[in-house]
View (cartoon, rainbow, N blue to C red):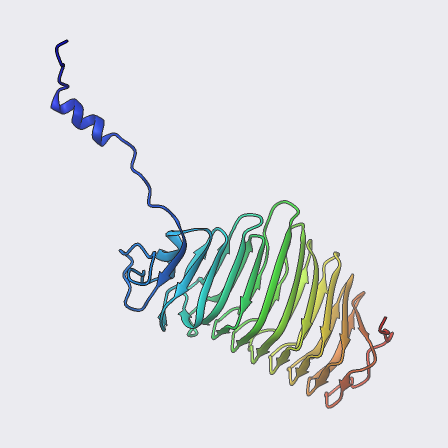
Length: 316
């Protein structure tokens, strides 16, 4: 049988019409001060320069490792990822944006460890803006000098879901809004814990501001400090959904307004083994808000209200 040769032009079309093979997303990627965003980011010899490039090359649920000190640029996250900053990764925003923006799908968990987020007083900036996902964990980090909040945790999921916030061994200071703001206008539940967190000298709001119109919130604050903030130390406020904040073994000191405040209802703030001192007012409840005590706190040196909150609780 005679062989029939395809015309060259037809062969050319056949070859070049084949679909491109995408680069494989990596479980582990790397960034370095000497890296290049044209690299593949997949090992220490070929790191990227910025987090955004490494994130684009990362698999869902992957890890980005920072190899040396540098500023690695702002980042928008749309799926689960872990950032291992090792204490020397700096992240700064552009004007009008957050240093890290989280727009992940339901169930997407974001882990951020060992980063320094510095807003450098750039206009209209936030440290971490959490809009959607399954949860956010921040450990061993510094978040400072943003003109709005250090962390805004504001789930905007349109269906009922669970969001989790965990912050530990972290400094949130010198921001123009709240140190940490938690709340939502959308249905669902937020649970969280702050452990070993210092919220200090935030000049335009509260150290910790928890307020929600539609999403129930259950939060524990332990071994933490909220001090020298222009507003209040810790605020729990409700627009009609249950807000519960437990404060244990904390220092709430020298805040311009109120040390502990529960506003509207049903908002309940429980406090135990804590020091509340040097505030404009030691503690306050407004409307149906309730501040409850286990009767074992140090409350003194406030301009107003140095008594223990009412309705002492007992350990069980």
